[in-house]
Image (tube, rainbow, N blue to C red; front, side):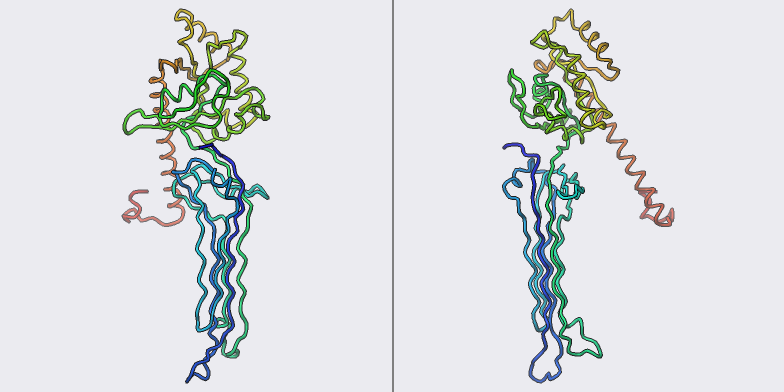
Amino acid sequence: MKFIDEAKIEVIAGDGGNGVASFCREKFRPFGGPDGGDGGTGGSIWAVADRNINTLVDFRFSKLHKARNGENGRGSDCYGKGADNIYLRMPVGTLVIDNNDGELVADLTEHGQEVLLAKGGEGGWGNIHFKTSTNRAPRQKGDGKEGERRELRLELKVLADVGLLGMPNAGKSTFITAVSNARPKIADYPFTTLHPNLGVVRVSPEKSFVIADIPGLIEGAADGAGLGVQFLRHLQRTGLLLHIVDLAPFDDAVDPVKEAKAIVKELKKYDESLVEKPRWLVLNKLDMVPEEERKKRVKDFVKKFGWKGPVFEISALNREGCEELVIAIYEHIAEQRQLLQRAEETDMAEEVRGIVSIDPDDPRFKTIA
């Protein structure tokens, strides 16, 4: 299936039904009074995060989503039926943005998360609500309110723990194939990868993480050159970036240091926060470097690049060094998850303590306090 990560849709909620002005006309009830019922509520439109969906392709071909109107009220105290809601299932990681003012409407980050996109109009009141001691035969009725109408832009940012970045043909696809269940296309020409690929890396039956590969970047990518700029947004949600460098390019005129610096420059130009993310340097294709030259070439590259972070030497083709890298990645991710969990628990405890007066003996707060 073609990877679709952008779409524009229009959502129209249903209008509320009108109330009715009606009077009871039954035998033996000469003063039956008003009996007009309320109109039904119009259908609302909701977004639902679904982990079983991977793309926004359905919304490329189905752009208009309109809910039904609520039924009008009727006599004999009969209320109009409310319309059913519409639930639009979207991939986890979808941003829903108002196309008119750029406001973020929803950020779907968890499976099953529901967000209201357009609220259905409320039904109008029937004349039974206008009866008073001085107005026993009211002819007033309320009209139903219009449902909300919005033009929305959907953007998918894949949720992955690790993101791969590098020049075309740096070996990113080969690496993700070597360590995960992903099987992207691999060939000996640039821009083989045309859309992001996700792979699950299993360290053990109960330990795993998700890795994302995007099309290779080139100089000027942040300004629209190449393919990578279309998918740089997917790196914004990752917790760790692996900067893969081809240490043995086919063309002797290619300078790996210059290419690596160009990648960092494009990251800064696109989003400063990407540069601040944890980033590891992965020197690939060492199997193509004579064994006696490897240490010197690695040392020279790190020195010229001015790199002070973690460095890993691998060969994705024969999987040399990949296992050590995978274990290090998982340990880093596990540590970050624990820190995040502790922070969330702390915030929750502070929130509860700030709102209510806690009795230490109350069993409701033993798990928090």
